[in-house]
Length: 317
Image 1 (tube, helix red, strand yellow):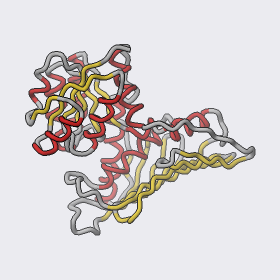
Image 2 (cartoon, rainbow, N blue to C red):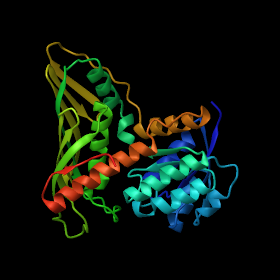
Image 3 (spheres, helix red, strand yellow):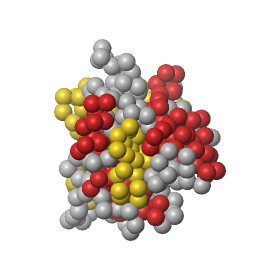
Image 4 (spheres, one colour):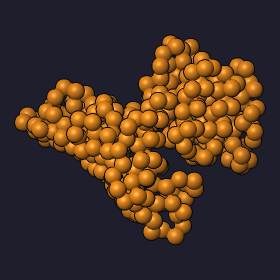
């Protein structure tokens, strides 16, 4: 596989990990990074031997750079991604794809018109435990899926300043359920609230979803729990699959004992490797801009449900 020249825009949090992975991957050549915090910029550029710029436009103007990861705060995704597309760069943007649906749709449309690839960073799809769970479901190990229950809780992350827990955390499990069941949410009902004074947005959410076939999904997310927990349980007519995202482990309970073996890998590494492969082979990214739109649409519907104290139907517009 040929090396792809890349740049990372925003290296304060998740972007730091993008830079780290690109630097270590044989498939990538990390050339430049950008961040508005000069101290962070200097530290990361030195550690990963990359040119550092406060103004990300400098990266976009480098003709040798083919791909950029956009890891800036969500409210800035649209401007940065559109600039990158305008410069002919392939873009891997961290979730959520954008702050609004209109922004996301414009980004996807612009990428198609420019002939560049736009991928969305829904990293949990690349968790080996989730990929194994999908394999088990498709092999009817637990029969027909009836419901799924997710718990994604932990302490408040001070770095998050522009969105609440729904967009930051719930979007992961909504996307994972979509991926596992291969069908969209038809209706969503949610309750949310804010308890922490230091958080400007909702810090806990309880979300119930109904998928097209009737499968029910239940999510609990918060920034109130003193420990981190990332779990998913899938109930079928013949058994249960229990996933621990953090341990990358699975327990299967059903008619027959299951010895589930998982090869542990860093999900972000697999996500980035997959996106680079799509560039080299001129294929659709595994997680497209349209997937990003779906996930954003679903979390925004959940937030609307909470505001209106009523279920919200999703029609796919």
